[in-house]
Amino acid sequence: MRWIPLILSLLVLRPSAPAGAPIWPLGLESRYLTGNFMEPRGGRFHAGLDLKTNSRTGYPVLAVRDGWISRLKTAAGGYGKAVYLRDDEGRTYVYAHLDRLRDDLRAHVRGEQARRGRYDLDLHLGPESFPVAAGEVLALSGQSGTLGPHLHFEVRDPRGRPVDPQEHGFAVPDSLPPVLRLVRLVLPDGAPIASLEHADRCGLSGALPAATVPELAEVRLQLVEHADHLRYRLWPRRVRLEVDGEVVFEAVNESLRWRNNRQQRLEFVDAGAGRELRLVPDPRVRLAGRRGRPGWPAALAEGPHACRLELRDHAGNRTVAHWTVTIDPSAAPDTTAWRPSDVGRRAPGLLRPEAIPAGDPEARIGDLHTPPDPAALAAAGLARLGRALELRPVDGPLLAARELTLAPSLLADRRPDEAGLGLYRIDPDGDWSWTAPIPADGSAPTVRVGRAGAYVALRDDRPPFVGTDEVATGLDRRPARRSHGIALSRWPIVRVPVDDAGSGIDWSSLRVTVAGRPHVAEPDPPRRRVLIELPDDLPPGRVPVTVTVSDRSGLTTHRSLDLRLRDGG
Image 1 (spheres, rainbow, N blue to C red):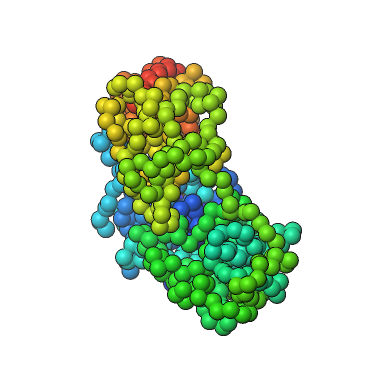
Image 2 (cartoon, one colour):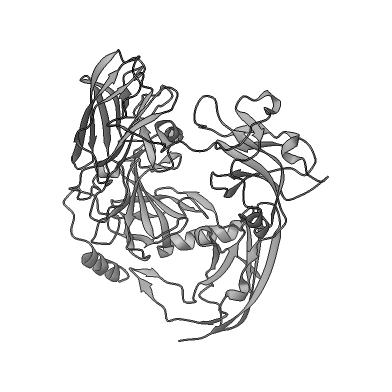
């Protein structure tokens, strides 16, 4: 009998699927994407589809095929709460940022969390643990580990590699072609940069003006793909550039190996006003679907060359632009039609490099071009030490973390055995983010750095904020309720604000007790809070709760509150 509400909900929410076709993973009639496969995302590629949930949580998440739950994962960040479904052919379907898991899955996860005493879990399961049939509700959609409500959905092949879900039965309607926003010609010295932009930013296509340059180092472009009238920024399936009838660069996004994910940094340039794709084959790129002419564009001979650019999305919509570029070593760049632009030219991280620590050609020490605001640092409980370091890799973008030994001048103001020290990355606007701890033993510390940029050493002397005073303590028990067959909590979720503007919260340090017993609470970093779900069988009355958490510098805050639980029926 317990299947009757589930079957009825599916009949209402989901139209029948053709024989052999997978079921759409979200019980929502509208099918809008807010992200698509291999869309560039800050140093990595997006591995699946982001399905819009109307800025709400609680929609049913459905098994797309018969199979079994092969993995359950909970984490403060990343995918948040995630379910992995494996089908009989070896493919895996990943559902991420979930809110509430199905009852049996939630009971298994909570039991393991209680046994291990921590929230973060990564459980690998066998076929006999949780078999599922296509159409079963696996969870409710949510926003765990991410900024806003949506469902992240992936398809992985039998070898565990993400593939484009739209090529495997999960395509969405799309009648809009990709939009070409900018084409940029880059000279060998990087300046001046000639670019062609559409004046009203609505797109370029057809014949573009010709250009004459003495040499050509790169061609770059800005573009955007849309799948529907909501105009979320996506990425086309294929980008191809032909010169004189020969393909010099092509990128087709069909599959992704995890080990190559950070090679996004080789293909794209973060240009301040927009991310730009480099239409230059890079021998270090091992991404599938890439091909091009070695040596392009440096090997272009003198004279005119016909260029043709084609953008194509999954549905077959395309945009084509073509122009002529003339290589004339004796001529100054012709910018009559190609407007000079400083887009993509950012101020250096340091104002005056003065030293190279330990002979490292990739690192410089000096003064920050845009230092953090001293008042903002003080408000966050941070104090600056010594000079600044800039990491600027010689061979291009940093694809893997590397170790840096900090020079003494970076820690010139350090006191003996001083705790709370860390290395912080400073962005061009002067904002900061914690990178690594600095040992307090007075030695020349070695830290691991995963991104190029400017870094300073800061001391954090303010513990985290835990806002127990802001929590409503009177809670009424609600009647037993279910949503799409999933039981909801009978007590309201206790939401405790937690924040640290300095080094940031170390979420692994979170400890909560309820009625004097250890309780595993859910970290919610994007909203700077802790979610405490009280046991359904907790009786009415006074219930003490404690929250203890540390920041990345090791400073700890302990707070308590008294809940008053009332039997509301």
